[in-house]
Image (cartoon, rainbow, N blue to C red; front, side):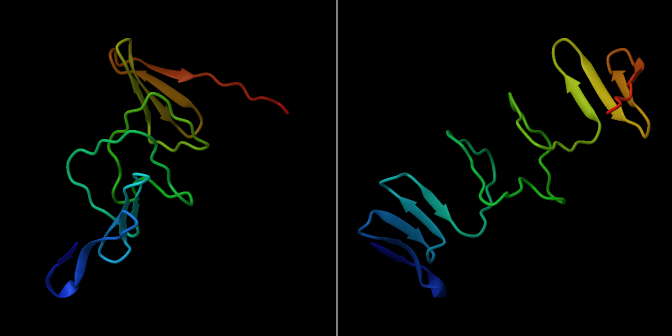
Length: 125
């Protein structure tokens, strides 16, 4: 089966190896493994659902400096470094924000407005 579209030539073709190729070899679907291959980028609008893992290659980033995710909902985060602005924690028991000042940390109870300086003691090596 072959579908031709405009001056761009072959858009969709099916190989005998049960792979569908859209464009050149930039987007492939393997019917045997269920794997989708994509070279380049894809723009998705609306909701996106998946099961299984989304695994980056070569330490790819999620988002960029201009386009950031506003909320990440997760049960667990495992990371080497986590960079945040002020740390905001909220659940059914409390609502707190940790502010990093130049010489201390401040914890604010967002329900009462009370602020607390977190006491820290230097550890000698």
